[in-house]
Image 1: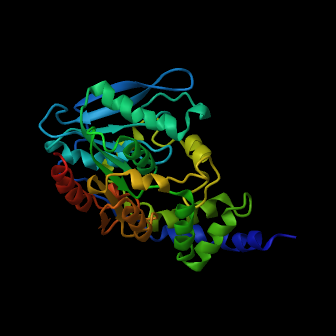
Image 2: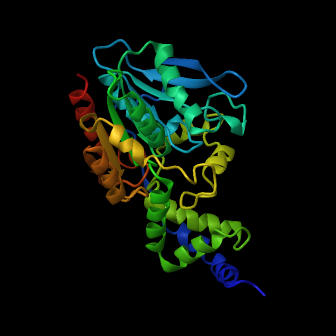
Image 3: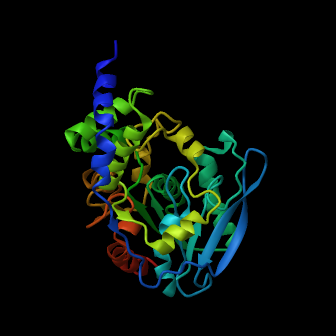
Length: 336
């Protein structure tokens, strides 16, 4: 006999992909002033299980200009720097640094799970600062990058190295993340929600149906736009725009379920160690990191919260103009 979950999923499988395909994403935009080509590139040595490896770093703008640079940390785990390309519009005022974590994008790809730990990824940040001789900078982390930014900020404050910290849609607590995901999944159309539940059991539903249902969730709460052609072409030219083995090892099958090494992660005790006056929390209005939850983290840190309209989780892609309008004055105010 088929389990009820399997039977239900099988009944939906033939209908769901076609129905979801009828709801395309809206077209995304590039930010005015975006700089697709870097002004400077480097392969920076970082610690690794084998002793040492290299990560790719690109810079736009003057590192020795009058304002502290800003580093952007990509999400995933397993993403790459292309999702931050719109942030290079800030290079008219300060240096903008983007990079790929080990095994991602243009970085070395040793493929050793022993490297896939929070402390080792965290060590990459200071390696970048030391390589370029940066005395003081701003750090912005999104999603899993927000986890690394949280860990970095908790270790750096009150040292003068860190001018400010921005935690965008951060993974602060896996338990809190999954609670949000369950709420948002329950808010999807009933047939999509039931299929997503069924897909948590391997083999309970056809992969095409599971992917279509997952895509529906992602379109609502992860990224709401089609990539601008220029950004899509840039992403597709990367050797490893998404490192699925790394994502699966540390997280799992999809955003709303965690079976990987981050399943017990809890950074909430670190919030009290942040400098609330120099820390900013950001969420998209339709973010999978729900604004109410991110706002609770901000309150624990004594920091402000900015909610970006017209955006889900991928804020710099969904609504770059509104996000940059928050970041510019924030960075300028906290330069000193």
